[in-house]
Each structure stands twice: as C-alpha cells, then as structure tokens.
Length: 183
Image (cartoon, rainbow, N blue to C red; front, side):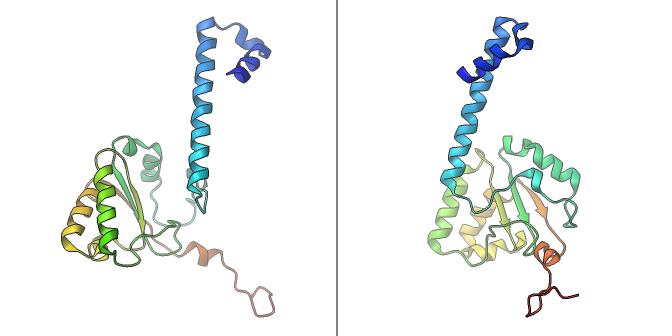
C-alpha cells in the first residue's frame, strides 16, 4: 500500500480524485498484490514442469478446437458453476499430463473417488487423456468404483476432443546422421 500511495502522490491526475476513490484504489491495489503473491507462492510450491497460459494456446494449428467453444471455456463461468472439463485426443495434440495410460490400482481408484467426491459440486476438475471418455470405465478397473467415479466426473463436464496430427511431429525436422536437415 505504501508503494501505491507513493505512486498516487507522484501522479497529478489522481490528486483530482475524491479521498474515498483514492483509498479505494489503494485497497484494490493491495488486494491485487496479495492475490499475485499467493498465486506465485502456490505455483512455486506446485513445481509444475511446464508453465502454460491461455494466451499461449495455438489456435492456428488444426486440432478441432472450435474458437467459440474455446472462448466460452476461457471465460471461466463453468468454473464458477463447479463444472468439469474433459480434454481428450491423441498424443502430441497439446494436452500434456495424460491420464488413463494404465489401469488404476485399488488404492488409486479409492483415492480418485475420494478426491472427486470431495470436489463434486464444490470445485471444477480438469482431466486430460489420450483415451476417449467411453473407454475410461475399463481404465479405472473396477466396474462399481468406475460407475461412481464417472458419475461424479462426466455428467457435469464440458468435453474438448482434440483431433489432427501431432504438434511435435509437425514441428520436427528430419535430421540425417551427419546432423544436417533432410530436404
């Protein structure tokens, strides 16, 4: 707040604002700074391998992403409504962190069910997978637990099905044994 106050003192435009408006600006700035610090701390603790943001999504590469649907997802109202997002498609289409590569163990099934039960109706969940949603039942393993998991995950979810050629394959250059690009 002290930093924002000093900036206000140096800005002649802000001197014309009423006292209440200037205080409001200081409080808003402090709240934004605190939110930024909390997010920075959480991201540091998470130690994610990749950083990603919506602005970096490549919509030019054909992957079956409808721009209007993507824009609605970016708005985030689905998050406010505690709805889920399921992103599926083949390897290399820009999903990262794939789920369902092997059948879950009994402990993993119980843990996943517990997490989804805790989140259901209270928070959104995003799942990415190479597997089509209609095969997830088998990837979970136990039919009864799979029914419970999928009931909490799928029925209030938006689906984004990616298609097309692998982005890695599209951007790769064939290199010969002598290290030269192949023509």
